[in-house]
Amino acid sequence: MTHAPSAEHAKEPLLSRELRKRLFVSGGIGLAILALALAWAYFLYAGRQVSIDTAVVSAPLISLAPTAPGRLNALYAQEGDTLPANAPVALVGTQVVKTKTAGLIVKVDNVLGAQIAAGTPVVTMVDPTALRVIGKIDENKGLSQIRVGDAATFTVDAFGSQTYQGVVDEVSPTSAQADVVFDISDQRPTNQFDVYVRFDSSAHPELKNGMSARIWVHTL
Image 1: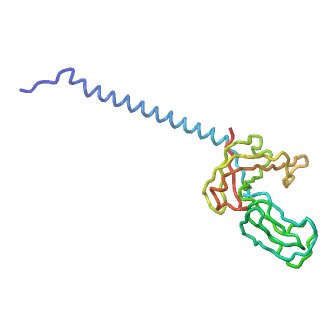
Image 2 (image 1 turned 120 degrees about the vertical axis):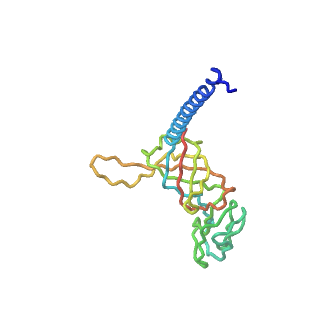
């Protein structure tokens, strides 16, 4: 004998459909809110990012020179050598010219027999631990947003899209005037400032003095 479904059983599919509908709508609203939140976060992040297209990996040059004039009698270093502190690099007259710190030799005056004046460099080196990425930015392209301590990322042309991490170490207090093409007579010149980004050079020995780079500063 077949029994007709009770009113309670008849309501179950209807309730189930209604519940699924509500869950679907709630889920859609949740996804929309999440998408808006992500879009807003991206907008804020992008708005707080300053790009510096012209940059170079660099360290201060250390010039090694005799304190007295003399003939360049010998050279004990070549470009590309990595030397410890207090290592002899040249003999000028009777004076042995030595390194002041450990570092990489980047230039050697190899004209043996030449007369060298006091204070004239015969060898130039850099301290790899002092390497930083130095970018040049126009004063009206976000300079006012950059602060010492801001996080930064950068890429190096030699390594494509590989990204490196750093921190803004210094913003130059003075500018170097950029070349400007004047379209109108009252246009003011735009000056450029240097932004220095420190990074862990010991973790990235592949980064060399003179490599071209690009910087993104993530301002607060």
